Image 1 (cartoon, rainbow, N blue to C red):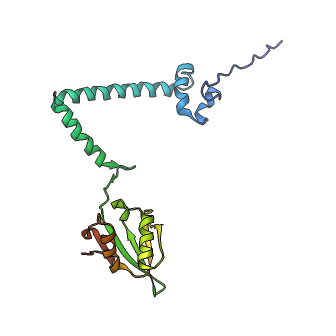
Image 2 (image 1 turned 180 degrees about the horizontal axis):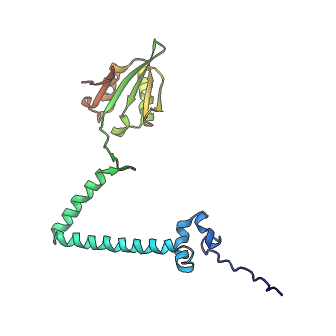
Image 3 (image 1 turned 180 degrees about the vertical axis):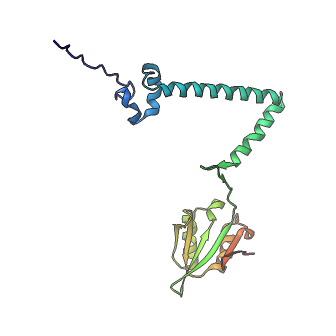
Length: 198
């Protein structure tokens, strides 16, 4: 007679509750990895290799840190370490290895003509001087008796749109209302070229 089949014993993950074979398809595989390394190393041999590589990298980093601190010497090591930290903060790397440039503090004013007669004056860069754009748009709207609103521009940065052609009157208003904004930092865009307001 044929042998009676035995039931299969399934090992369930102690973290997510799924069978251990299906943990990688579960909601949080990263949290399951330590448990799987300990309880089911035969199912995921790559996890063991990954763990040993991480430990080796960590040990190499520690050795590198010890070597740097010894090369720096006693008192000079702290100052050289402090000098390196700001440089790392200034240079920000974006995905793909591109370096993010620091934005210049400048206000750019542009006049956009629509429907041949209607004009919109766009003010960009006031937020770089610590000015709240919503407050600035209210003040501009009251001063020039027009509609002013904060909108997102084509580069997803917020800017102020003011109805009407107030490009040259606005420079004096900005420098009087917000003394933090120097007149040398205000520019116009005319015929696609940036021109200083001063």
